[in-house]
Image 1 (cartoon, one colour):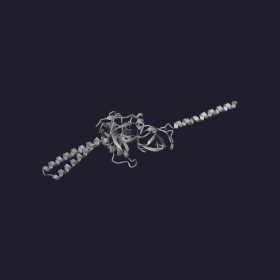
Image 2 (image 1 turned 45 degrees about the vertical axis):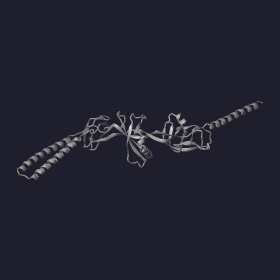
Image 3 (image 1 turned 30 degrees about the horizontal axis):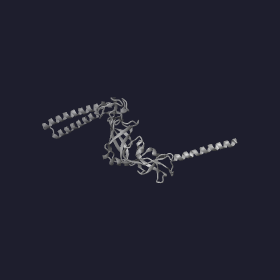
Image 4 (image 1 turned 180 degrees about the horizontal axis):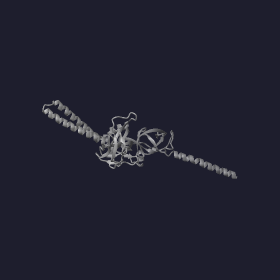
Length: 360
């Protein structure tokens, strides 16, 4: 009798535990929410990797071979235009100048004596012309000697910051040797590459864009406090990448930006009649985005989509969806291809209004 009671109790437990999940599963299968893409005029921010360059960045090189006699600046120092930076030992060039000056003086005396003789008809005027030519040549040699001597003093051609100085005092430096580089960081250029479709959109909508201001996100993910202006676009596309380079200019009063830094340009892209969907309505497989589309028989079909850009909680659709497509919003993780579902439809305006970003 006890065995019959135990068997009956066990059967009841098994029956209750086996039926309950099926009922719950059936109820869960009906909990789906569907919406459609929202078509709006909006804008999104697109990021582009950028290379930051000084408005002027030049190499300071030796123009005459010699010993490095003096270094008047230090690495990282700000210098003014005309400031003396380096001096190459000038003794040889000073001697050459003295020699040229002496030869010039001798040529002047010779010319004066020849003029006197010409006036007395002792020599012909051709002798005077020869003496004049000798003086002109001597003056040219003196000017060249002065130029060579001036090359021993290296001065800053503009205001800027000194970079690394590889040579030390007493080093023998050949003609053309690199002393340092000088960067004018008062303003900075940011170069970034834009694809052909994005370039065409930019060029087509340039007048309706309002302004060409862009932002710069630094390597530490903090924004530069100053906006930049898109100034120029290069004349040719890169055949290998299919991109074209843009250049933006940024003010740099705090000297935070340095030549060679990297960052991300943030450009606002205006869109007319763009389709947007919540990001949570998508799922990813092997770096591709998909949504579940509901057909007229309430059957779920997966569909690959391409996005043009993204905003907080929203994707801007490039292709793959139309404004009338019904997409699965809630229950994406439970749905499978060819499932027939019951669902509740919610208007896209209502859905998006509950996201962090309010559609405008």
